[in-house]
Image (cartoon, rainbow, N blue to C red; front, side, top):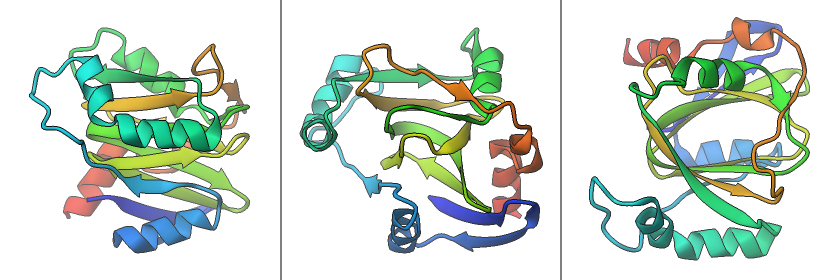
Length: 187
């Protein structure tokens, strides 16, 4: 289930949780974040190739490419056996911005985006079928968990792909990790 948690910037214990998809979508829209659900146009096997996955979502990808001028789309897969999972997680956990619009669609698995807007922090737990955008220059970070499991379609306007401008803030350490949030939600 997708979950939006809205925190006070300096009081992570002061929060509001939203679980209804339409309510999450409406709340994120107020800060310029696109949140959608996509479905594949064809059944995907467990061992589907990257091209098979991209083809299964090609209509939605084309729509966003036309809407925002994205130049490329790729698929990234990470699981608990990935040899660089610790280094990648640390990089994504550091608050940063991008000079371009960032879009991620979760084909499989889950991840936790945090968007730091004004005096609020929006924690968005994304799961299979969720698409989230992060507007350019919005400070944010992402947690894939200690034992990641995700496959995401990424869309880029920048031919260099993922380029981050790190803020050097330690704010991300004040908010729950993906693993901690999952424990909270299960309790």
